[in-house]
Length: 91
Figure: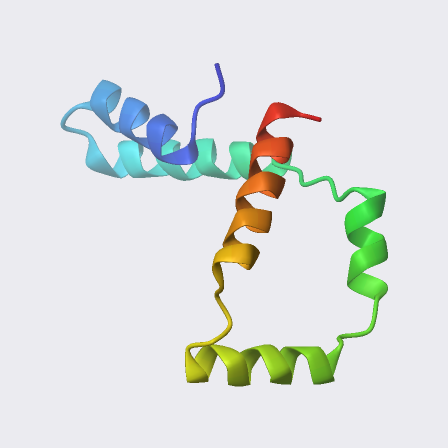
């Protein structure tokens, strides 16, 4: 089970009792230890998408439609729900 930094700090503070200065030191050490192990992996797909140019015209058009209240249609919501269902089912 992976514990968060907050969980570790609470655990350390609970064990240390009245010696708060020592408790704080131990909490800082636990947080630093956890931080050195934390990693993030970015998929190749995500890296590819980050490099794609922003489609400014499309963004502006959609912003305008949202402002006017005409962007969300039943058809677009149906497509979004279908895509979400596929993503959640893994197909």
